[in-house]
Image (cartoon, rainbow, N blue to C red; front, top):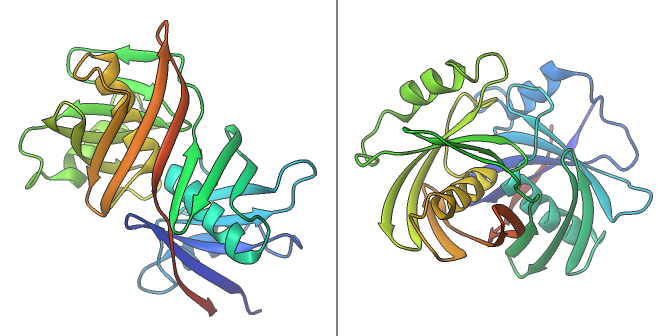
Length: 257
């Protein structure tokens, strides 16, 4: 069987995209998803995303990590899916779609995609880190020597350690550059390694920096391995609303496998 696919990337976070509006893709075949994401034997990607028909929204997003398992929300994946939907002619410059964490509004201008993320009601502040859920769970901690830091080893230790245990958490290491700019490196569960960018991760970092009073700004610049992203939000009585993730999402290539 031949499968037509498209490759997109958002600040180096790359995805295999499949138009599954006809429901021809076997969503239960985790080995097939893992194979397609494999960088040596398959196409190569941090995740695989299906674009599906939705009764009331523009489309539905189904996201899989590169290990083949369906996962929680992926911010950069959502932004890339908006670009994919535009390129397919499903939308023009605005979108409303459903993902695993609910409905998302988005807009696209050229290759810049703005994606509205879920509200964040709880930010857990600990002595050594902050934990919050931005559609996916995220551990956030400062690390001054971020340039030559062993992200994979320490990230895995935290991801599998207490209190995260079986479910695990994504892990973000942060260095403050100035009051509204932060350097971020992320270990992603499901990929089990560092990725060049993580959308829900930088969203978590921006909110965590505001919640811990590292910044008073509500527009934060995030420098990641694959480029630059921006996160804006409104805070009201400890709840973060109107959260937007902004950055580039680009088509890479189309193929058949």
